[in-house]
Image 1: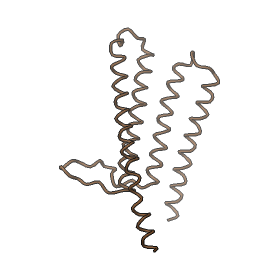
Image 2 (image 1 turned 60 degrees about the horizontal axis):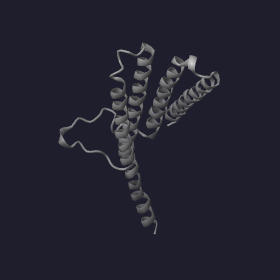
Image 3 (image 1 turned 60 degrees about the vertical axis):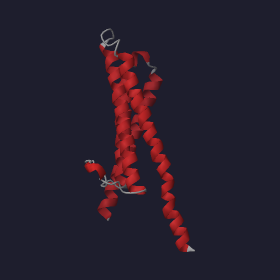
Length: 164
């Protein structure tokens, strides 16, 4: 009976497969949004103020950071929880593939969230004259919470590695 339960639990990891497929669709949507941003503002590029252009570029950086986060979570999650990826068609493997454990994924995700939050906060600061002080304050507080969480997770990870 134990063998059957263990096999069921082990095979249930495949339930994550549709989740990773869904993330890849999310990545496609994010890519479409990225190009939508470019197409939408390309005709206006010479007429817009520099600050608006910077905000658009920051928005594109935001999308790129989220996209990188998605790719990292998809690949490393698939490799860690479902199945190792093969090197078929002589394609080069990404350096970090197969080397990231769950803790390093968490730290990378936390770092990415801090970076995304930083870009978002910079966008808010650039629009400070049009933004309520209350909103700016809460965005800074939330950003600091992300930063402290990332430091906390990195510290816990470091402490767990030194004990083992």
